[in-house]
Length: 91
Image (cartoon, rainbow, N blue to C red; front, side):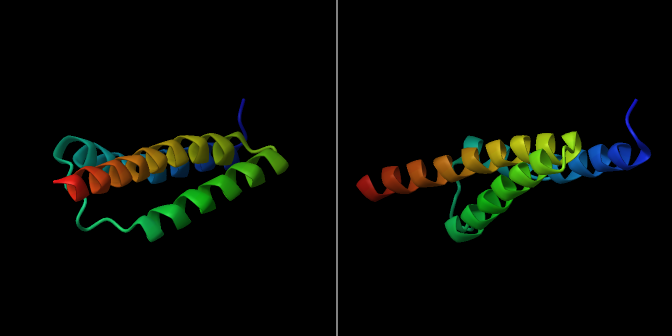
């Protein structure tokens, strides 16, 4: 059984992780990347990586799992942006 703090943590993790899904889906489907900042996405990914380390350090499954998932989504967006920019530069 998880503690009340971990239940709140998992709930918060769900919402903050799912928040990136609409952007990822839209970016992948439409290839529209004009308004996306690689700088912001890189900072977000770096922050998520540090949260992963922190989650391991304090042994918090909610912090660890949420940031593993979020960093995967953000990395997917980063890769899509880079790929689209390369493709568009060739046209």
